[in-house]
Image (tube, rainbow, N blue to C red; front, top):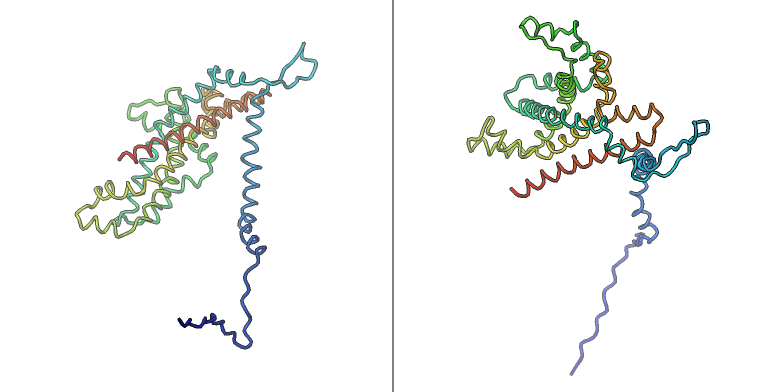
Length: 321
């Protein structure tokens, strides 16, 4: 049987003057692989120094306390306290009352604020709304004003004997003292709503602008227009934006500080421990840094539980549907 001759594979022709291609060396490939980490290194270093390190230091300080011997002539010594600081904080009625007070304000203020932000965003997204640029800028303007300036302005509007709002209500037979213990939570909640509604509105409005026009046009062809279009099409599609603004609002409300401190100038009845951060600041003023660190850690844990608990609850309901 005659065997067929073996044909050698054809070699690629190299044109005269052409430079043969070289495979990139392993060293060059490794350099390309590590190049993105070089760009991330400044951010990681800054994140560790400004965020992670202070948290770790606060947790470390919360495990110690200052022990004083005798009549106080000798300098205090730092001793390991374990979880005794956390027990003291949880038994401190001023701190626990401040946490409950802030949570009660947020339970009413956050839904009202986000509801207004959603309605305003839907109105700006409507085709028939005139002067959209003017209204968008006007609604965002309160957020652009520094919080301290806004607090001073509202303090003037709340102060008894000067408040034009109280004067107008007095002519109607309604005598309201916005600085009383009964009205203080509502007054501070109104300041928060005024200052942050425009910010949340812009986030939701940006999510509405990202909705493909084909979806709204198809819904309009099926007869779904107006508020039915907003309820059945737009609001479900901006659910991630609503979730994000809710989490941010929970975190911001738990960190409430500026507005009560400014209101204290016209409301002497406002306690110096009205919010958790004010209570921690009082411990710092009393040179009790370890207890202040403990209160900060407890507040961070409360924020963590509320934020991630809310996200998990919403995601669970969404997956069940």
